[in-house]
Structure formats: C-alpha cells, structure tokens
Length: 341
Image (cartoon, rainbow, N blue to C red; front, side, top):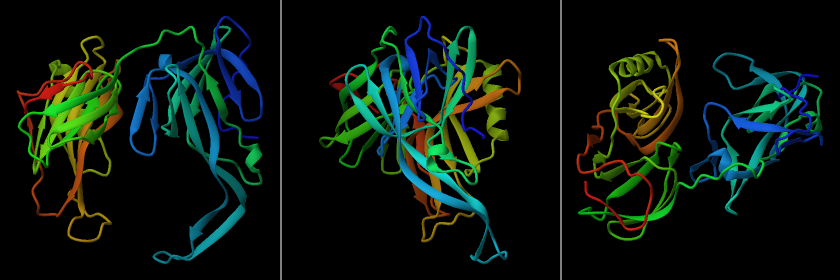
C-alpha cells in the first residue's frame, strides 16, 4: 500500500519529542523544522507563525472527508464529465497548535517539513492539509500524523506580542500594515481611533506600511551585496506565476545569515483574468523571504507575506509606493509606538 508519508521507526532515546500517527503508532526521537524554520498556520483570519521552541503540541483531525473518482471532460469546451476508476478517499486536516505560554490556535497548517531523528538516522516528514488515498481505499486507510508533541527541554523564545501604534498626522482613512521579517508573519490590526491601531504580531524586524488613498509609505531597511542582489533579480526574471510583473522596490540581506534575503515587491497582473466587472487586475505589495544556495542558480522564494492588496481597472494607475525615510523597521512590538510617515 502506498503511504502518504515516509515513516521512520524511532526508538526511545534521550529526546522527548513524540509523533503519533492516526493508526495509533507512536514514535519518539528529535523533531526539527526544515528550511522554513517556523510553524505557520492560517487561523481563518491571518497567517500566524511560531518557532518550534514556542510549540508544545500540534494535533490534527479531519475537517472534511469525501470519496472521489478520476474524471475528464467528455468534449473540449463542454462541462459534461466522464468518470473512471474506483472511488478514492480524500480528507482535509484541521490543525490545533498548543503553545507553551498557554495559548492555542486552530486552522489550516501551511505545508510544513519536519525532520525526525533517532539513533543517528533522520527521515523527512512533510505535513499537508489535504490528503488523498488510492482507489479502493477507505478513510481509515489514510495515515497521517495525528499529533506532534515537542519536548519541554527546549528553550522558549520571547519575541513580539501585542502593542499599540499611532500614525502621526494620518487622516481618518489611513490604513496600517506590518510584517515581521524574522517570523515572516502578518500582523492582526484593529483600528481603535482616527490614527491609532491595536496590533498583534509575533516576531521582530517589523516592516511598517501606511496606506493613505492611492499612496503607500513603507519603512524598509537593510543592505545587500551586489552578488546577492544580482541573484535575486535573476530569480525574479525566471519566476513564472499569476502575476506577470514583479517590481523590486527594496531588498535586504540578513546580517547574521548571508544566505537569507528579504525583498519588497509590487506584484501586478496585466494579462487577462477571469474576474467580471470594471476592476479585473489584482495587485499586491508583498515581503518575500529568499534562500540562496551554494550554487549561482540555487535560489528559492521560501515565504511571502502581504502588506496591502487590491484590484484595479485595466487602465487605472497602480498605488504610488515610496520607501519613506521617516519610517524605519521596528525592532519589536511595544505599547505606545509612534510612526511618522
């Protein structure tokens, strides 16, 4: 039977991490995160992110279960379908993250890579929220990690949290957005007054952005080597996705890790879309995290977060975006912070 995950039998040892699968089998060893270095979950409102040292346990349970069959359109351009083969099971998993500080969050866990190590052997475990069995199987035949318990001996990082921000001189229509570059997490923001905001955000090195009408001011900082810039620019040229124009507005390199870079990008769609009405062309202002490998062409856009997004008419102007010298990245969130764009 083809399994969705590769399993490694972990014998008991010096580590306290435990993985339990849906069939009841429990394996012990050391659990580590892959390149993303964070557990990222969409809680139905925003994407949240934690280091593994902040997590006590992640549990999974089926949110949906369906039996499906392979199909194809009978004729090109028509909606009639022709089914084939035996039914196969699919399910979507809802994750609950229990934190060491007592908090919890539930939602859709973004695809996450874990490494399981025991007895000097390591195996890769890829967690996905949507699973698929093979023809003739039932729901119980789909094996998945039902829980990952992280040992208490790990140190707990304290970074970020809650705070209040005032945007000095902002009008009543001003909007605020924040992204932590250390955690690659978007802030949850509630407007509490004409130019005051209550913010929840984990992580430091925070990029602030203030939108007023068709203008967006961004606080960006950091330096980058010419070689790293050249590799990022080539990576953007080689990239193929829904957005057909990607404007590089800012770039920085992690001073502690030269293989990690961040970019500020304005993504726009000029080509045809399936949207109806006068506004059909999406745009996004995003922060991307890049991983640079040892080879020149080894580059990965690892994570992306949205500051602002919108949809415009084909001939309408894009928002005017400027790197504002009056704004600076915020080291960490605190109460009574003031931004002066």
